[in-house]
Length: 178
Image 1: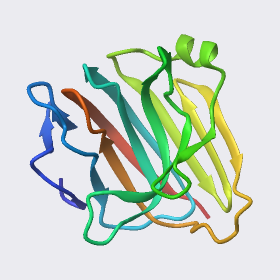
Image 2: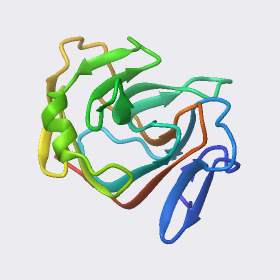
Image 3: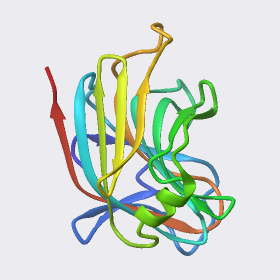
């Protein structure tokens, strides 16, 4: 976990993957393992899967830690289920606007998500433009209109509060862009 910081009680390395959470106990509140380095224009590629009763996790980007708190503030590439449909690849604004900024077509997202199996995720940020793909299917093409929103920040791996669950992350590659 070199280059990352967070509550190691909720994050471990297993089978060459970063594993967040537990299948044996509830997750008391959202937890984040974050890069120590900030990124602005980048392409993030990784594989992720979510297993267990808890059905929510995500990848933070262009985010910041909230002082003296376990939460972060910033964009999130969501992973999980909501109302029986996949929200993998939806763009959520964590702890700031607290809402989805982009929701993909649920039928297409359901077809393109591998539940309890590895999914390929790509997050690309350039200027105020954010794009996200899940297994080659583009879920987000978003242009931030609020120019006060930071264009740089940390990248974080999340496990959401709630029932026992594990979010697995592997093959993480961050490529800075010009």
